[in-house]
Amino acid sequence: MLRVAVVGAGAAGLCAAKHILSSPSSFAPPVVFEATGGVGGTWCYTEHVHEDGRPVYSSMYRDLRTNLPKEVMMFPDFPFASHLSSFLSHQEVLRYLESYCQSHGVQPHIRFNTLVEQVKPVVVTTEGVEEKTAWEVTSSDASGRRSMETFDAVLVCSGHYSDPHIPELPGIEHFKGQLLHSHSYRYAEPFSGQSVVVLGAKASGLDISIELAKAGARVTLSHGNPRFTFPLPAGIQQASSVVAVEDDGSLRFQDGSLGRADVLMFCTGYNFRYPFLDAAQLGLEVEDHLVTPLYRYMVPPAFPSLFFIGICKIICPFPNFNCQVQFALAVLDGSVTLPSRTQMEDEVREDLHRKLDGGVQRRHLLKMDQNQWQYCEELARSAGFPPLPPVVRSLYEEVWRQRQIHPENYRKLNYRLVSDTEWEAVD
Ligand code: FAD
Image (cartoon, rainbow, N blue to C red; front, side, top):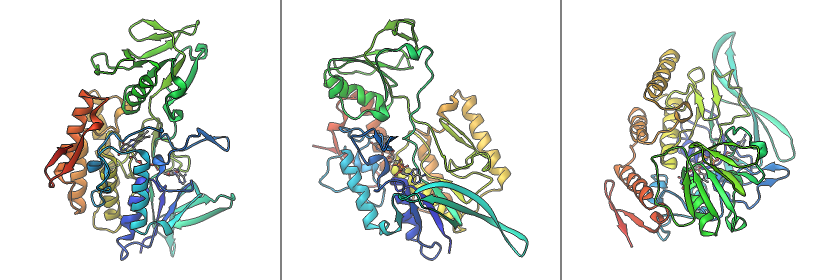
């Protein structure tokens, strides 16, 4: 039986542990290492932005409502409670993850307040013959006591929304107002009456701009796509990207215009960070927005018993994790045979080049968007588990469409799944 370590007890780690526990003939119960005192990762809201002098892990803000309805956000085999409306508060998502954890008996296998410090491959030899790679996992508990254990495989489920990405802005030292990243944004009231430039108009930038405007801030939503304009509520104007700060502290925008602000808020995403891995040793490059080469966006070709779960962006996260985990376990239990190392490296290289040649910027290479459905389907086909029901894609795409048209109001709708292929909007 294989011993598997899981790093992190957020949605991805809980999903990994659940599936490991449901295959007791192939896997020993997992060891889930969790740095904090609870499950849920991102969904553990805290008002604080620092704890014990260190930035807190979660980037959750107080009034967030999910940008996906519960009908597609859920793990496909574990629906949210039926009385909840489609778009959820962070408390409701956290309760769901806690209940997922309890229902599948995962809790006893989690080591809370235990930080993974190092995950290192070691070659196990028997009678002088090189046999296979094992993984030494070094962790420290709340009292600082360190221990090392060996596993057959590691699933990295440590998330990627906690290390703020702040783009370089020439002259930023001249800015006289408040600088912050959405990682440290909690609620809008303190910004009432202030002028706030929000840089970045992805999910958080857009949502936070709407919250700020409702609280009486004068918001400029600054973003890079000049043709992309949203019908936004009063109090929000749009501008091109901030590209520099002038000596007098004013902001210079891409179109050459200048503006002043009390607050410059970066909604510019997060960096990948794996302080417990030696990327070079694993044959990996970890950049701010990219980890490569990863076969099927999961497996380093040189170390096919290490898996990264959940690193793709613009996906339907929980269903995607559910597919990745099942594929990873099928590789480990031998029901899927991976191609050779060279073939995996070639496939990853070809995929990256195809995207780069098609005009995709390097920092967007892990964005899946439309490709996520085929990706999940291929994982399901090769590992022999049920594919996502077509209704997930159809409702996900409808909600995206609604979000483009009504960014302020699309969450007022409720949905119901009628079958594997059909959904309906309900009052
Ligand atoms: P996380 O939730 O980040 O969990 C990772 C866990 O690993 C954490 O508990 C952390 O403490 C632990 N960990 C990290 N490093 C170590 C270590 N070295 N040792 C031990 N433990 C470690 N998704 C949706 O589906 N719908 C939404 O509406 C939605 N809204 C979002 C809003 C915001 C503001 C953010 C930031 C994300 C949102 N997401 C949403 C995406 C969300 O991140 C994913 O849905 C999902 O929760 C990510 O789960 P995860 O397990 O990959 O990572």
